[in-house]
Image (cartoon, rainbow, N blue to C red; front, side, top):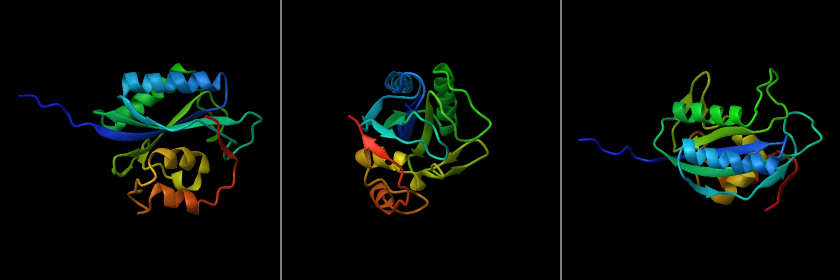
Length: 167
Protein backbone atom coordinates (compact mmCIF):
# COMPACT_ATOMS: atom_id res chain seq x y z
CA UNK A 1 0.00 0.00 0.00
CA UNK A 2 1.29 3.47 -0.88
CA UNK A 3 0.91 6.24 1.65
CA UNK A 4 0.93 9.90 0.66
CA UNK A 5 4.12 11.66 1.67
CA UNK A 6 3.72 14.14 4.52
CA UNK A 7 3.71 17.77 3.51
CA UNK A 8 6.57 19.87 4.80
CA UNK A 9 6.72 23.64 5.08
CA UNK A 10 9.44 25.47 3.22
CA UNK A 11 10.00 29.18 3.84
CA UNK A 12 11.28 31.05 0.82
CA UNK A 13 12.44 34.59 0.09
CA UNK A 14 11.77 35.87 -3.42
CA UNK A 15 13.47 39.00 -4.66
CA UNK A 16 14.80 40.83 -7.66
CA UNK A 17 15.63 44.27 -9.00
CA UNK A 18 15.85 43.89 -12.79
CA UNK A 19 13.09 43.82 -15.38
CA UNK A 20 9.43 44.01 -14.36
CA UNK A 21 10.02 43.39 -10.67
CA UNK A 22 6.34 42.93 -9.71
CA UNK A 23 5.66 40.58 -12.60
CA UNK A 24 8.80 38.57 -11.81
CA UNK A 25 7.58 38.06 -8.22
CA UNK A 26 4.11 37.08 -9.44
CA UNK A 27 5.52 34.60 -11.97
CA UNK A 28 7.92 33.19 -9.36
CA UNK A 29 5.00 32.61 -6.96
CA UNK A 30 3.02 30.87 -9.71
CA UNK A 31 6.01 28.65 -10.52
CA UNK A 32 6.61 27.84 -6.85
CA UNK A 33 2.99 26.66 -6.65
CA UNK A 34 3.37 24.61 -9.83
CA UNK A 35 6.77 23.02 -9.12
CA UNK A 36 7.06 22.93 -5.32
CA UNK A 37 3.62 23.13 -3.72
CA UNK A 38 0.77 25.39 -2.72
CA UNK A 39 1.70 28.70 -1.15
CA UNK A 40 0.00 28.79 2.23
CA UNK A 41 1.13 32.28 3.22
CA UNK A 42 2.71 35.24 1.48
CA UNK A 43 3.98 38.44 3.05
CA UNK A 44 3.45 41.89 1.69
CA UNK A 45 5.94 43.02 -0.94
CA UNK A 46 8.82 45.10 0.38
CA UNK A 47 11.07 47.52 -1.50
CA UNK A 48 14.62 47.17 -0.21
CA UNK A 49 18.00 48.56 -1.03
CA UNK A 50 20.58 46.17 -2.46
CA UNK A 51 22.54 44.34 0.25
CA UNK A 52 26.28 43.79 -0.17
CA UNK A 53 26.59 45.88 -3.35
CA UNK A 54 25.40 49.15 -4.89
CA UNK A 55 22.78 49.47 -7.60
CA UNK A 56 20.43 52.28 -8.57
CA UNK A 57 17.32 50.05 -8.70
CA UNK A 58 15.95 48.76 -5.38
CA UNK A 59 14.82 45.17 -4.92
CA UNK A 60 11.32 43.92 -4.36
CA UNK A 61 11.23 41.10 -1.79
CA UNK A 62 8.51 38.80 -0.51
CA UNK A 63 8.50 35.82 1.86
CA UNK A 64 6.26 32.83 1.19
CA UNK A 65 5.51 29.54 2.92
CA UNK A 66 4.89 26.61 0.63
CA UNK A 67 3.63 23.14 1.54
CA UNK A 68 5.72 20.57 -0.30
CA UNK A 69 6.32 16.86 -0.49
CA UNK A 70 9.72 17.46 -2.13
CA UNK A 71 12.96 16.89 -0.27
CA UNK A 72 15.14 20.02 0.19
CA UNK A 73 17.52 19.12 -2.67
CA UNK A 74 14.57 18.79 -5.05
CA UNK A 75 13.20 22.13 -3.85
CA UNK A 76 16.56 23.75 -4.60
CA UNK A 77 16.61 22.18 -8.08
CA UNK A 78 13.09 23.49 -8.77
CA UNK A 79 14.04 26.97 -7.54
CA UNK A 80 17.06 27.09 -9.85
CA UNK A 81 14.77 26.09 -12.74
CA UNK A 82 12.36 28.93 -11.85
CA UNK A 83 15.24 31.42 -11.62
CA UNK A 84 16.65 30.36 -14.99
CA UNK A 85 13.19 30.58 -16.57
CA UNK A 86 12.92 34.16 -15.36
CA UNK A 87 16.30 35.11 -16.84
CA UNK A 88 18.49 34.82 -13.76
CA UNK A 89 22.16 34.98 -14.66
CA UNK A 90 24.52 33.80 -11.93
CA UNK A 91 27.47 36.16 -11.68
CA UNK A 92 30.89 35.22 -10.38
CA UNK A 93 30.56 37.93 -7.75
CA UNK A 94 28.22 36.70 -5.02
CA UNK A 95 26.04 39.82 -4.86
CA UNK A 96 24.70 41.42 -8.02
CA UNK A 97 21.58 42.80 -9.66
CA UNK A 98 19.19 40.06 -10.85
CA UNK A 99 15.75 39.44 -12.27
CA UNK A 100 14.91 36.96 -9.52
CA UNK A 101 16.56 35.25 -6.60
CA UNK A 102 14.78 32.62 -4.52
CA UNK A 103 16.40 31.53 -1.27
CA UNK A 104 15.36 28.72 1.02
CA UNK A 105 15.22 30.32 4.46
CA UNK A 106 13.90 27.29 6.37
CA UNK A 107 12.69 23.79 5.59
CA UNK A 108 10.67 22.89 8.68
CA UNK A 109 13.30 22.80 11.45
CA UNK A 110 15.87 20.87 9.42
CA UNK A 111 19.54 21.78 9.49
CA UNK A 112 21.48 21.02 6.31
CA UNK A 113 25.07 22.05 5.65
CA UNK A 114 26.20 20.84 2.23
CA UNK A 115 28.31 22.47 -0.48
CA UNK A 116 25.32 23.67 -2.53
CA UNK A 117 22.62 23.73 0.13
CA UNK A 118 22.69 25.35 3.57
CA UNK A 119 19.47 25.46 5.60
CA UNK A 120 18.59 27.55 7.53
CA UNK A 121 19.91 30.37 5.38
CA UNK A 122 23.25 31.25 7.00
CA UNK A 123 22.89 35.06 6.87
CA UNK A 124 19.15 35.41 7.45
CA UNK A 125 19.59 36.95 10.90
CA UNK A 126 21.87 39.68 9.44
CA UNK A 127 19.43 40.91 6.78
CA UNK A 128 16.42 43.14 7.40
CA UNK A 129 15.25 42.62 3.81
CA UNK A 130 14.71 38.92 4.63
CA UNK A 131 13.56 39.29 8.24
CA UNK A 132 10.94 42.02 7.64
CA UNK A 133 8.72 39.98 5.29
CA UNK A 134 9.33 36.80 7.31
CA UNK A 135 8.37 38.40 10.63
CA UNK A 136 5.07 39.42 9.02
CA UNK A 137 4.06 35.80 8.29
CA UNK A 138 6.00 33.77 10.89
CA UNK A 139 6.99 35.94 13.89
CA UNK A 140 7.06 33.00 16.30
CA UNK A 141 9.02 30.64 14.08
CA UNK A 142 12.15 29.60 15.99
CA UNK A 143 15.50 29.48 14.21
CA UNK A 144 16.72 25.90 14.82
CA UNK A 145 20.37 26.91 15.29
CA UNK A 146 20.04 30.25 17.06
CA UNK A 147 17.10 29.28 19.27
CA UNK A 148 15.46 32.68 18.75
CA UNK A 149 12.14 33.60 17.18
CA UNK A 150 12.08 35.50 13.88
CA UNK A 151 10.55 38.45 15.72
CA UNK A 152 13.42 38.45 18.22
CA UNK A 153 16.02 38.18 15.43
CA UNK A 154 14.36 41.09 13.61
CA UNK A 155 14.44 43.23 16.76
CA UNK A 156 18.14 42.41 17.32
CA UNK A 157 19.23 42.87 13.69
CA UNK A 158 21.95 45.52 13.22
CA UNK A 159 21.27 45.97 9.50
CA UNK A 160 20.10 49.53 8.90
CA UNK A 161 19.40 49.26 5.17
CA UNK A 162 16.12 50.61 3.78
CA UNK A 163 13.19 48.19 3.94
CA UNK A 164 9.75 49.60 3.09
CA UNK A 165 6.48 47.68 2.78
CA UNK A 166 4.72 48.67 -0.43
CA UNK A 167 1.54 46.56 -0.42
